Picture 1 (cartoon, rainbow, N blue to C red):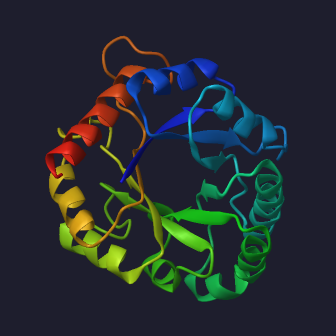
Picture 2 (picture 1 turned 180 degrees about the vertical axis):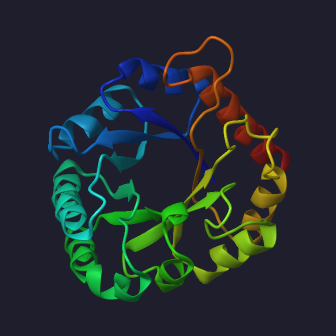
Length: 235
C-alpha cells in the first residue's frame, strides 16, 4: 500500500514536512471555490520541485448542488488532464440516490475522455449511491472510522474492497489520534490487505496535539507514523 500525506496547496512548508516524514506521496488539497480557478499545473509543478510523488488532488470548496458541482468538476478534470494529474478526490453534492446514475453520466464521460479518475468520499454518499459505484473512472475513497460511510467494521471494509472500485482509503480518528479512537486500525488494515487492496491510504483530519497551528502538523505526523507502523507490522 502507498501511504500519502494530505497537504494544502500554496504551503510549501507542508511539502517539506512530507519529505521529512518520509511520505510515499502527497495529496494536495486545492480550493476550487474562491477564486474559481482550475489551473492545476502549478500544483503538480510544486510537488515535482519538492521531489515528491503526487497521488492526487483533493478538491474543496465545491458547490453542494449537482449542476454547479458537475460543472466545476468537469473544469477540474480538463485541468488535471492538462497538468498530468491522474486522480481527483472530492465529496459528492447533496442529491437523491435515485438520480445518481443519470446525473453522473456527463462526469463519467469526461473521466473517460480525460483519463483522469474521480474518487468520491464514501462518507458523503447514501448507501444506495455507494452500491451504484464504481461507474467507469468514477470510483470511491472508502472512509473508515465514520459510522455509515460504507464500512463500519473489518468485514464490511473487506467486502467493499472485494466489490471493486476503491481507489483510496482514508482513516478518520474522530478528533483523536489514530490508535486511540474507536476505530481498530490494525484490524481494518489486516482485513483490506487480505481482501487484496494495495492502493492509496491516508489519514483524515489530523488531531490537535499540544501547541499546533491550524494544519495540526504534530497530529498529522502522529497519524502518518501510526499508519506506517501498522503497515510494517503486517508485512
